[in-house]
Length: 341
Image (cartoon, rainbow, N blue to C red; front, side, top):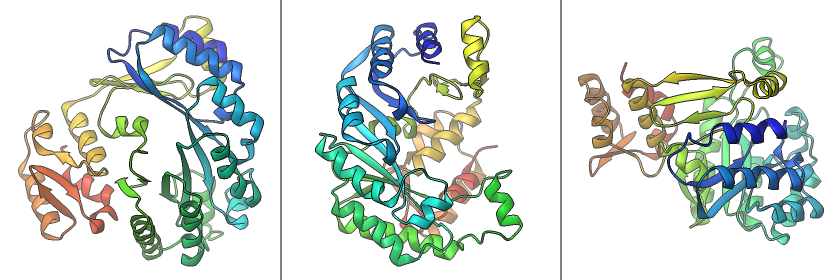
């Protein structure tokens, strides 16, 4: 797999015209890579692409993989930011989500990372879980605040079609949290983090000053990116491509010089809708002039925009649209109503 990844980097070195400012080891369990493997990948990237002087290099890590030896190896390899998939401090939730780590590991991993010098780190939490009480949710958030975690990502549990969870819900084995409970937990998240000097710079992402995720911000701003490895996606402004998901097929295709990805040319409507969707989710909002450069605003768009502003779900300031606190509860719905067909 490592050989195939290194070969793909070589094959695609002309894909990006801009210098690379962020590198993200994510998907699967990249924390299982050895220091030597991480160094090999980073060296290949710098050999094939122009990079900025101060590159943000993030590694996704599970709490059970975080120990003094691994932290030291990551530091030595050049990792300077950690993304910890903690999810919950509640044993029953971790077991229900089939997470490998324990509550004890969840409690220890942050302080271990900080002691190893990883001051730039982010931790994931999930709300809207069955049987998660408001007090338990407040406690999860407070634990991260107390441990001075500079970046927090919080996601609502969603039921994807054709999954085991969807089947359980359909059969009544699991009762999902109601929309009212999910909304209450989301608004509690906003209130607690705002009171403790965290800024909500994207609907699911909060940080202390200076600790925004540069990597994810590039996605939300519509910047170009390249994805390497099975299932990885790439975007160059006019087209999107995605690699084959199966590991064996990916390795075989790379080794034998066969096609390992599919490509889609983006229509003006696609580009308009993506810029709208991602922009609305952020503190930067979406600039109407930037939208007009792609497609002229329709009567349907202007009518929907006016309706959402009147309902106090959206604000228009300096020719830019922003979601209000109430609007953030229904961001996907609002964006879909503004989409150009």
